[in-house]
Image 1 (cartoon, rainbow, N blue to C red):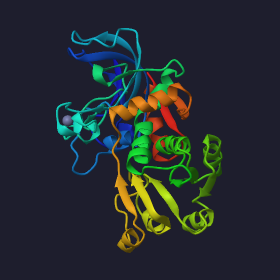
Image 2 (image 1 turned 120 degrees about the vertical axis):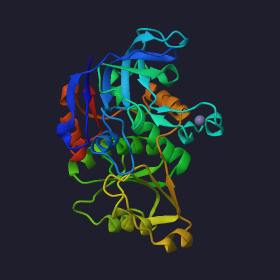
Image 3 (image 1 turned 180 degrees about the vertical axis):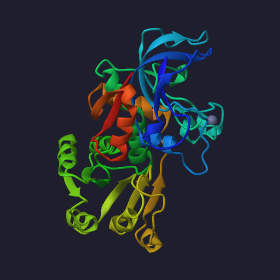
Length: 343
Ligand SMILES: [Zn+2]
């Protein structure tokens, strides 16, 4: 089969479209003919390499996978050949206390399909455990299905479980044009919040408004802190949905309302954020982190998608062979929603 692989870390030029051996499913695995695979910042980090993280090379990335079942292992009983599947990206042991209380994303053995330890779906075929296979609702095509898993399960975990967003609250969504940002705008609206979208271009803000955002801040030409205070009557945001990191935290922390929460799932602009601790105790502010979400969350999210209460946002599709162009678009933040590759 053909796949996008890299044999060394580096720039986009290390991504090679090449022939690789066909994968064969183990007894509890399903072989998927990949129909669509969406890119995430994780794909960029895997390619460039991160200090302290060892990635087995050569590597096939891609953790947002949708495909058709081509074969099933002998112990599979629920999934059948020909079914349309989207893949829940997290793999856990299924036996530890975290797994057994449903917090499988907190399992110490947690791995991501297409993450550091496992090859992913930037290929014609991929093998995944049957337990990770979720039938695609009729209302979604393969591209839409591939655009869902990582961004929606993460946004759901962040807003619903970590920040416990409530109706009427002001939710500030940083990077509202990113994949996870477009999911956050919709999840926050689903729970009756007032959404303030933050992005760097008027075009992205107009699209965020069309998705349901109530207010917009253009950080490229407006003062972020001043605008948050203006839009919240000097109170600050109840929830800050964050994945950018870096110097922005210095502006965000003082502009969170008393009892407010900052919840983060990323640091695409810098790993260090500075916090004036006085704001945390004097205003009872919480800082929360989230890594993906649980398999149960994934099923809940797919239910909302099936009923049209949430919808995937796709910036564009590209042939799998043009994966490097997809990486460029992500690195330059030149997208609104997901870039989806088609094998
Ligand atoms: Zn476990």
